[in-house]
Image (tube, rainbow, N blue to C red; front, side, top):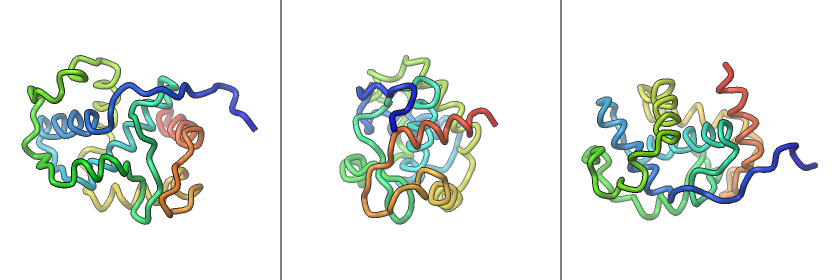
Length: 156
């Protein structure tokens, strides 16, 4: 069955750019950040953006893994990144820094979830509808499932 509103299958940024922007925003707020927390926050930003704008934010879809959603290319590319050193002025953020829509979604997510621990975010994500509806074997999580879930989350 097709959803009433199709999701545009184009993306705005590489997951790396959004994760760096997230890290910079966390650092501005003095929130503890590490690779796992960035993965979970990125899932929350991805889902929120999808719900609000009906468009994909990143070049890769999240996959369901045993500890919740993961962006595998990002995981591979950024494993050694020290996220605590990323600042808003970082040259790698030049393409995303002035995007008001993305900044607003990041602010929303960090306002709701930013202060949570990595463990709490993992637990929340693992128990969310998108992960429960997807086998945890590296399967891509449906954008329609993500969008519909985040539509209910944002309205709360």
